[in-house]
Amino acid sequence: MPEYAIETAALRREFGRNVAVAGLSLAVPRGEVFGFLGPNGAGKTTSLKLLLGLVPPTSGSGTVLGAPLGNTEARARIGFLPEHFRFHDCLNARELLYFHGRLLGLPRRGLETRIEALLLRVGLDDAGHRPLRTYSKGMTQRAGLAAALLGEPQLVFLDEPTSGLDPLGRLLVRDVIEELRAGGATVFLNSHLLGEVEATCDRVAFVKNGRVVHELTLASAEGTLDVELRLGGADEALLEGLAAFGSGVTRDGALVRLHAHAENVLPELARWLVGRGAALYELRCRRKTLEEWFVEVMGDDQRPG
Amino acid sequence: MRGTLLIARLTWLETRRRRIALAALVCGLLFLAVFATAMYHGFRIAEAQGGTNPVEMRIAATVLTVAGLYVVNFLVTAVAILLPIDSLSGEIGSGVIQTLASKPIDRAAIVVGKWLAYLAMTAAYLALLGGGVLLTMRAFADFTAPAVVAPLALMLLGAAVMLTITIAGGVRLSTITNGIVAFGFYGVAFIAGWIEQILSLFQNTTARYVGTVVSLVSPSDAMWRRAAYELQPLTAVVFQAGPFGVASVPSAAMIVWTVLFIAGVLAFAAWQFRRRPL
Image 1 (cartoon, one colour):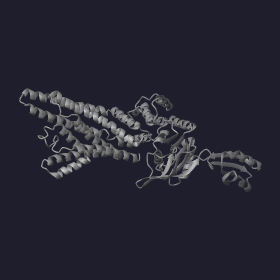
Image 2: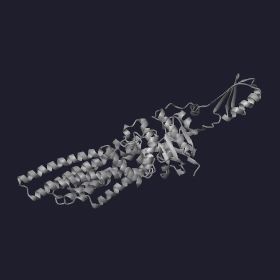
Image 3: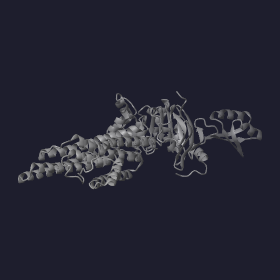
Image 4: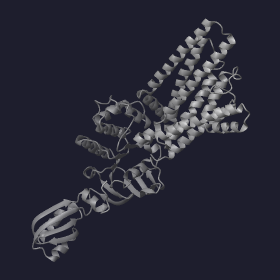
């Protein structure tokens, strides 16, 4: 089994003169919840379509679950929830899931039980008999989520999965992502809601003008922990010593700031300060939010979408 | 094959649920009711007057059968164009196609599955209307067409040409553009068929050549002309030109070409759809 669920090298897609994806190089390990971030028009959806084989690349290559992009058989192990899930609205949710299951190659036997369990999971068990045209936007998205999970996929692409969902629906998506992670599946999450990404993703990539410009591991992001100390009797030697615990040490009167390498250095830092005889009045730390990262990485030329 | 049959089933279910099949059925039955009423009264009056000889009666019955089937041919062709007109372009526009194309089936299965479903519906519609006309003539005019299967099969082939062109157009064109192109193909073939027939009476080889070339590009009308010939070989000498005329009978080679044309256009549609970004 390959180590990476998704691996691409310089994927490029042009539409006439417009370059939608300039050179996408990604490596998403199996079992990771991966966030894909970028402003509108950055090429996120086209990148996702390239990975799903919906759009052929102009150049470059890649594999998904070890198979070349667009491989038909590999799609049986992939779940996909488009941003605006649509299906034939004359069908009801049970019929929708039945067709999805059969198209995925699932045997008829056991399919009905799986459909009922999924309808219950997404809260549509009471509405499973109603045509999709009578569904609200949130209900349609829930039906799409059930369809994406139907084949017990090893890799799930979620394109703005919470668009149109109420807070309970968003919580459902978050829980589902956690369940997928617990089950060992890889999740590729394309979302504008940074709080949602921060709460669920292990790692994120920032996309700008069709390229990945920065990657960040959220759980142990180096330099993401801003530490603020209020000290009495801090001399230059003490400030120099603080550099062993982090970077960017600055002083503003009694306030000393630095970016800690990791959260686990904090107790050691406190012990070291006390040991050096410094008067420690206050130690505060704050992790840089994903929104701050986003603004920093995207720079001045980001355009409101 | 599994994917093709599933898409065909899904297409049929959608056509039924959207009441498209019901609307076509009601309109078809309405046409048959009007046709049967006209034939019933027409032949009863002719019999009551008692002045018509059997040869004239047979010619009249033949012409009326061909006239009825001419309307059936138009209705079936229209259905063959309208049924799939927004099938692919509509699903591409709405995003439904992304859900289907991300499944482990070949994209060609989507094109062929839809084509099969619409072809079966068109065939059923033709069997209903064509069968209705032939049974009406048998019941009220005591007329049995010299051939039944061959003309209906040729009419289906002509309708299948338009169905396939419309499916292929839907891969790249918007719904309205596709409709304009499909009816354009039909119209050009129709008028070229007339020109070919009328001018062939004057032994005009250029016109025949133009007509044949147009028939090669859009062979739907040629199939109707061959079907009309199969229906009225005896009266063909009398009615040479016009919609029921068979002054220029398409050859067996044209039938083979039509089958190859349908297969080729369908293969092209599948190939294009495989390459198309969705």
